[in-house]
Length: 411
Ligand code: UDP
Image (cartoon, rainbow, N blue to C red; front, top):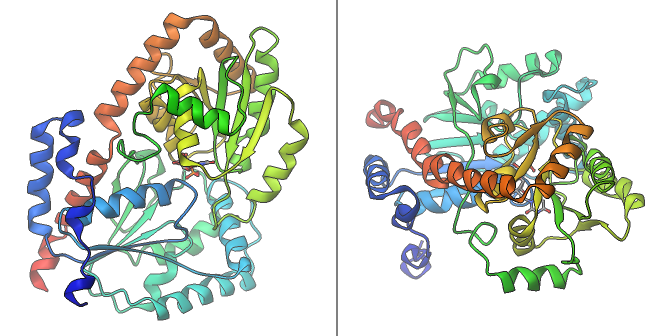
């Protein structure tokens, strides 16, 4: 690379020191120290989409922060035909407990597409981090010379057995597996590490917006501001239970006046999104808005202004949207599943619910009791500050990479 082409890292605005105001100088110093032995180490992350969904969101910030700490870190995505993504979405669903008909044909397409990706990606980095099932078989196609880590973001507590047995043969070739929470641990020959996701407080999605900026975004999308907003922001995916959200809203509005906004997008690696979106359109009403738009500032505006944010998921490895809303001091009512149970302490900094009726009851309660709502919101923000900011996520990655230090020394 010529000198003129060198990336001017100093021009990227966010530095680890900027986190000091949230996590204190001691934490920042500790992170800088942990990054020291890793300087110059070449890292690569591989997943299946640059856009849409929590994994892309995490990689966006993590890869920049690692580069800022002088750990050159790249981010690649696997490419594939629609067949491939149909299969990997079925796998994703089956890992979360649905059935799959695992045919030879499916396995063949899956492995073949990943083999092609392996040919055009040259992964000779000092650490290779592969995310989720889509690129999992990459490892089969390389002579591994450095640590390879599989990072699974999915709730693995009840996977389809046949599928899991098939995938384990790839998983066990890795040097470590990272999952979001301990409950997802599997019986594996490989060490398992647990790292919960986190949010970037400086991103367009999470930085503080002024009241007028929020109003401008809401007005732009013709979202009425006269009644309290009940909001769910999620990829259009049946695991997020958008229909349950609409039902819960319909029950709640018998007692309280509000507007429901369901904002969603479709990730490029999720072929089911369009269909889920279309299945919701008949539910549209004056006070039930279903919006499919890519507008990060709108996500922020809605999470900031909402009276209640719902994340009524039926499965959720970890819900970034929950943490994003909590950071804005907004009370969140989340499905009592997976990672959300670690994000919300029921009745303390949010509510956990297991049915449509419970969700409706909590919405009513929060709309009626302003004091409770403010108390919950305040605790929500504080719990994110303590536990769910990108600085903690970054630090755990540095620790993980440092744990392979002996291997680096041998190289
Ligand atoms: N998101 C967005 N626009 C949308 C819907 C979702 O920007 O219309 C973002 C959301 O803010 C969050 C991510 O996509 O950062 C979703 O992550 P999460 O962990 O909640 O769920 P996943 O999609 O990974 O299952």
